[in-house]
Image 1 (cartoon, helix red, strand yellow):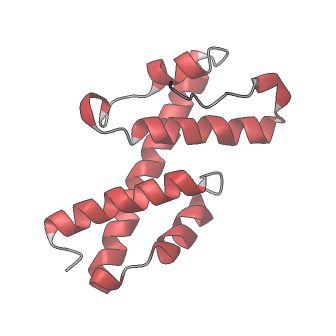
Image 2 (tube, rainbow, N blue to C red; image 1 turned 90 degrees about the horizontal axis):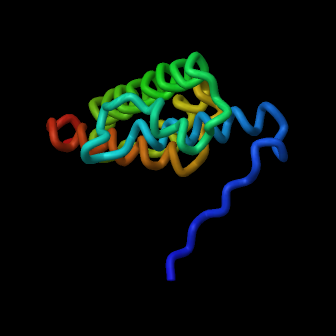
Image 3 (cartoon, rainbow, N blue to C red; image 1 turned 120 degrees about the vertical axis):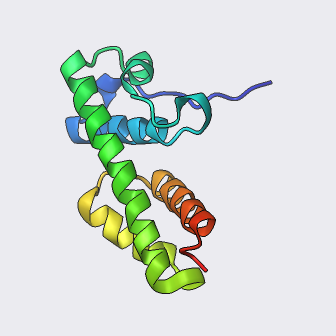
Length: 125
């Protein structure tokens, strides 16, 4: 039997909490590997949040793609400075200063992806 995470109804959340939830969903979509890698998130985010307007979806896409790029670039820079001693806590503090809405799961995922690229390019040696 499959277990699905139950989604809260948007009306139950205050606007700030709902926006953070939507941004985290969008960031997770932006980081997807495979056929959706680096592709716009609007259509996939609309499936989860059909009440969003096209302008809102476009805004979420821009912000989530920007956050992903900033995260990858930040991890890469940290890896160039510290090599294998790069710490997720250093990344998290820099990332959350700019994107305080990001949840722990997305921060961890961004760090892992960024370290993968740094390791692949030899920056984390």
